[in-house]
Image (cartoon, rainbow over all chains, first blue to last red):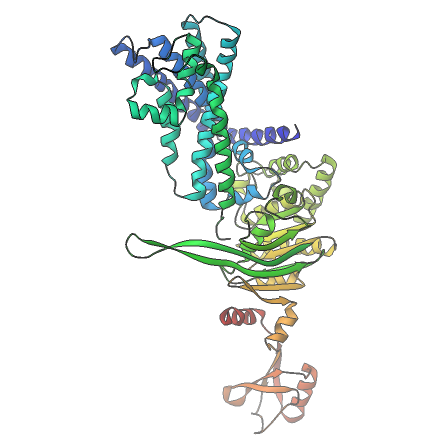
Length: 266
Length: 316
């Protein structure tokens, strides 16, 4: 619990730093919101051309989009700035984190908390809630639990991907935008029913990389629909657990990476 | 307190070999360093750029894991026990700020109090002492990004001391500072060291830091320790001597010799002569001179530590 106080203090420090640049903070917050709104609008635009996509109606698809949006922005608002690790490694600034009596990852996360993304979380939550309401879900205790756990699982899953791809910087200092392919690419993938993708691509992203369990499978379970791709009904209910191996792998890669860190000349 | 045994750190660097091929090559940044530092010692680390000073310091503070060899501080092994060690050591990097860039200086201190879980009373007492000795009051409310380098460095040193460490590591603490700020930092560190229970390890390029602060000098070159001892011992070892420069009305008679001194350069048609003193005191040498010649002016020149160190680097 003592640690929580420390991290709260670090987050407070970040908040006050932001306030020293009020105007740009406000501008960033709005432009950030704009990006998320656009992502969701794309889905509406798509459904103007056709009544169903991949066998799903607009309301059903929006449930997947909303789940993805909420999970992603939750992850983005907490660990999204871990992408900045590149800069810390390249400049050797990570040294200053390593001499403090705290683990490096939470230190980085809380020192650099991207609070400008707050509005996006509100928007993501709104889309998700409206999608739940629009879908005549037959509520059971299991479905209520699933509705709560799925965005959290999605947030953990995306968070793990953020950390994992940021860790590349320990191996390749100029890792550039490789990571974004997985984070933003993955988000776009799970925003739609995975039935719209071609076979090998779907197999790779949905099952091998686990993105099919972030929004698509839990949405099926919430809606009470059988999977046109053949997974059993219970698969949707255990989907949030996909976050656990993702977090484990990310932690392992991060730890290995930190040990490889070589700092810079003086 | 601090022990290093055959400490070694290798880095792999990729070197261009041909148009696309790149070869891996291993470079030893620290190449078998063994040193022991006792509590209360003030140790100055010098060496040319790339000699391995900072790398050694980073292994002592847990930033880098050694390739081989052993290192311990307070009996702790820095890399696996990094966070425990961090509570007991203070670290200042001259070239990287540990302060919160956009916040007033006092906010950084407050955040550090949380990070190190320092009881408020202790924090206040230590901060008060630093405020007095380092004269911080004029800029405590200024955002760090607006501080001058000298002010910031005083802030950095305070930040490293607020949790009451018994060992302070400083990596080039006076780099880039003006003369006045250097003096302020040095006299503060000297006072800190004089209290007796603080161990200080610093790296520097400025030998004046060492002359002012450190009773022990470690010279490192190409990752190896080439000298470990006092500044005097370094002079003795490299035969640097005090010298006596005299201006004479008339050149000295041929065959003149001073006991305990050897004649060096003769300039200005014999009107200026330099003697290196080996054994003789400056007083005895002057007395011997005035007995035979009329001396117009004289000066005693202390050996220049910069020269000694420059010779040491070139020999390496």
